[in-house]
Image 1: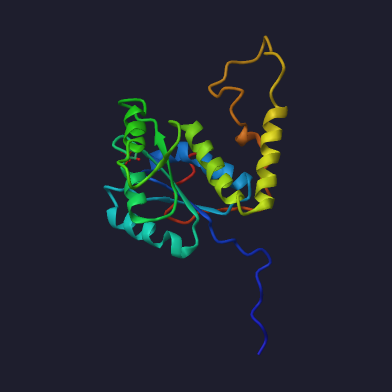
Image 2: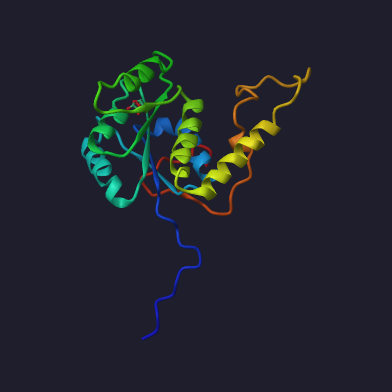
Length: 208
Ligand code: RP5
């Protein structure tokens, strides 16, 4: 009996799970996925709401470590209980990204995620895009402690970032929403390895 054909480019199992409470969080959380893709860290994205889909959250978080995930990035806005509830269901490190809310500009999200009572930690990042980018970088740095190739890619990314900083400001530079010192992840060349596992229940790309 002939052997089953081996796929030419098998999709690597995800190591980082990116979850968010709502489709409306995706414009923020996509930055975490982009950083992980750039660093060739296999990742997956899901909408998992602590209050609208509580059973989905419990199932996702409890299965995360047995499935091989090594860290979870959870983004939410407003009451923002998703990261804390996720951390309650899994021993994996959970990184929380406060999504900017309309009512309180993300201060509600930030305080809700940061102020976990002692015993169940959530590593809290900055509000919005900066937090999502840094959550991706931090998850990668955690994995890089046991992955020298990934550590080298992280070093290269930092060197690239350093090299992109001009000595002096350009007088005619256009005003930008994104500070020039922010990591230009969106401008970076895509890797030839699509790391993101984007299933049917993943957030839709608003640009698509
Ligand atoms: C949270 O409520 C989500 O994380 C989102 O940031 C916020 C608003 O959700 P939508 O009403 O836009 O779905 O659960």
